Length: 167
Image (cartoon, rainbow, N blue to C red; front, side, top):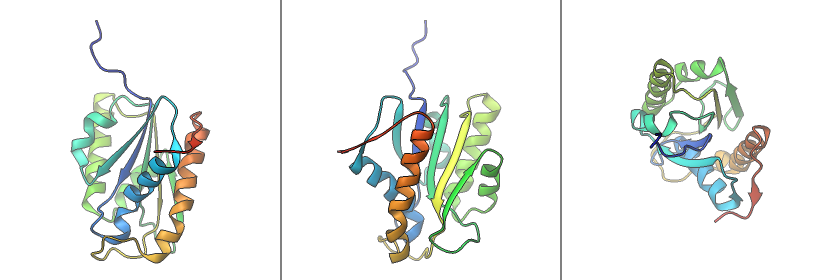
């Protein structure tokens, strides 16, 4: 008898530190998704903050993991970044904060246990500033809708169309 609770196949995970200006953009994008859209059954949204290994259970046994985060790629600030497949481990080599190392550890642990999501995608923006501030920089605040739109497009590509009119 399987007593394990049913698991949504898709996890949208917002990552970041809200105290470090653009480092919090993954959380801000997740908040906008929750405010603007209704999600079909099978999609779960989660504020991962800077949790790292604490996300092990939340990320296990998913079909798709969509991570929203600041991505330091060397591109100009505000550039939309999409990484998937073999590109995702490279993302963790370019980390801009300690939580990304923790997320790398979680994915490695899930792979060893056979519970890693089959599809891991990272969507983000290149940050402009990581100074102490509760607000996003002007450039990143202007580009946040682009990231939210990319997340909606990605969910639709996965077969999970969202509708306008969230909570």
